[in-house]
Length: 470
Ligand code: ATP
Ligand code: MG
Ligand code: MG
Ligand code: MG
Image (tube, rainbow, N blue to C red; front, top):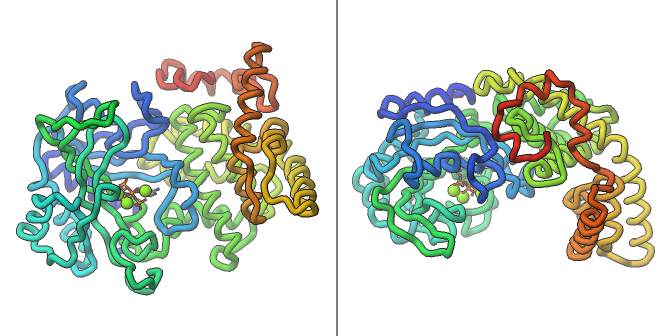
């Protein structure tokens, strides 16, 4: 059945509602009272206080579709079929209520009965020491032993720093041999896109302390995460998350602006995917009140936007375009995330301003970098020195990873330590001078240009203070 993204989301939430779960809306991308995390990266992250008992949940069973950002995955975006920096994670959660005996069969019921996935294409992994999970999969669910793969701590023990953690069990869908890498040992857990991991069931039995020790939780919890985009890939039988109904429409729009067609040139395709993905992240970040800046999550956002703009240039787009793509993101996701429609003006302005700001220096910066590359080639040098990399950052607003990406396309790299040294020196100078003097300037000034009515959308919005930008 060719289910749309919206249908899959609905079916998931209502399936778990029928199992006694309370549907909660997605939490914002900015973590609340959580210094360990820059951006929400899983359905479980904003629920931590319920898992630890710090706060009482509105129900012992909760289900959500959570906006997530994972910039550590940025290198894989556009290269694998299954990674985005932004994605939606569906989840069902038990706060000291039900455990493995319910969670595993329900996952199976949802996937095989509600979605109707063919049983013989499904595989699962479990933590090597988790015999309890094995027994449930094998005896209760009836999955043959050879499709239950035992994996080590690295893969099947879930933890994100301090907090609740435990063994997990993941569900995989075999997309068929033609999607695989063809290596003889290709199977569940292979980096290629044949066996797609789509759901992670975490059996939260422990709490990891600051010092790395574990405590057993009095009441074990369930925390699961299913990638909505990945499930859509499976249900829609397409090649990658960039071809599912929602994201595909945004990508098509980018292709239209660029005047290229998807699937006819590998380099262009890569740029289309990067822009599409980063526009999604940027739109949702702005929608939650994050502004581009030189620090923290604001800098994450700035890097994503600038990288997207540069890929726009690679496609031959000269004019500001990213805010238009962002508008498409809003169009396709405002149904599920009404805040996007409510804050549309704000989102578009933030993206547009950042775009105009970077447009002014991008071309000059590129010229400068081309000169440097020429010079390096002539001298047989392969590593860009820290001073030049820093100058590109400081004068032309090139984030380090942007310069890095451009150089790696030429088989070159950067002396990142040298860059860091320059950065430190700059910070000390700035501290001494008690004011910021670099090109990117102070963000208070830039966004002071935003009209009051736009800003006022966010006054009384406590999370905004975390950014220190308004
Ligand atoms: P992978 O191994 O493919 O990187 P993961 O093991 O890091 O995935 P989890 O942390 O287990 O992912 O997150 C739960 C689910 O969220 C995954 O099973 C997947 O469906 C989805 N997911 C994780 N990362 C991404 C991403 N970058 N883009 C889209 N979906 C993702
Ligand atoms: Mg991952
Ligand atoms: Mg994984
Ligand atoms: Mg996983």
